[in-house]
Length: 314
Length: 245
Image (cartoon, rainbow over all chains, first blue to last red; front, top):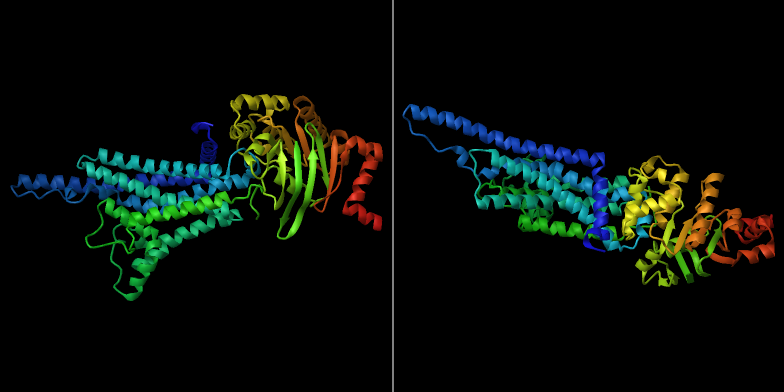
């Protein structure tokens, strides 16, 4: 079969189409897009307001013959106005990815079509590859929407012009965002394939998401849950105590919300001076490793999925 | 066409199919009888490559189920006891997907052909979620023959169908066998159906093959349907229990 009609591609296309018809998936994805738009609007609004006030003040100072200071909008990197996006990705983006990953395999199990797929001339690897490809496509789709919103925001802001390097940093941020959502999507896929019941298949990755987003940052950087999702106040050094020293050493590599936050802050130029990730592994490498592990788990769970039974056992 | 050699399956130490050796010739309609839990579905799952046998071998249309499962899958169609499909998709959407997975070159055209063949073209654009058992069974049969398999496996095909549905399905099975030369392997409980449809039968009891013969030989030896039922009951645990009582 050609690439366009290979079993993996057919599984991927069918799965993606089927998942997109799901109301929960559509609702969460829509919420993600709306929040991305809000984050862009917040950044745009804050920058525009400061710029407008500056222009009014500059005009007044100029008319009264006083020296005009530089525009504060130009003192900070324009990329930092996208910092709210990283919060929404860590919250609703990751949650959307979990639901998408879970439904990609959960819908086949719930529909009870696995025996009918299992007797087709395709290997288990084609099925697993198709599901993972569908997840990659949908995650990239979400990231692409977020990217388009970010690009549009920078293009409509008159006071802001990005350099080539800054556009590359923005692309890097979108890559990191895709990795972060991809990790949770793969965990959702693995749990959806391995769990005996539909509920457990969804609860397991959601519990992991809660742990990584709200609990681990408290242990690795002594951040309260609200601060953990705040892109500005969350970026602070943990107390210099033995507990936090060891917690950061041991749990740091697993504190993925922290890794994503630090990677985003670095790429969007809002990481305060002297603040570094609590993990000894660089944040982006940390995310790549996590995605690698999640990919292996998802592959194993899909390859071991029993095709004899239609649905869930419970 | 189908040959098994000491095919065995066990779950948690309990033997479900015990050293099953069978030979079914091309063009036969084979009826596989047995009580609930006898191992009939497990046998089909192994022959259709959905489950790996614990030991033993089998070939379908000359392809080994263990070493060449993809070739086996190209040669077979399968209708499970409860046909389950994507309920939110239409019958045609479901069938196009399965046809594509089976490597059918022009899936849309083939789906229309098969739906016409099974006299259910009117189901094409209806969502499967609202289908009756009989309608599902027809779409189930359609998905199994999309790629024109040599062997068709049917697991309790008449289960839950009304007499009209049973007759319709029987006619279709006979048609697929006579017009398209498909070899049919059918698990069933219905002795009356065996006599009307099958060319050979076998009885499985607690995973062991206890009887296997051609239907003419059986009817010549044991007579009509009632006698066939007597034979079946005498070979199964329920029948033996009745004898003791």
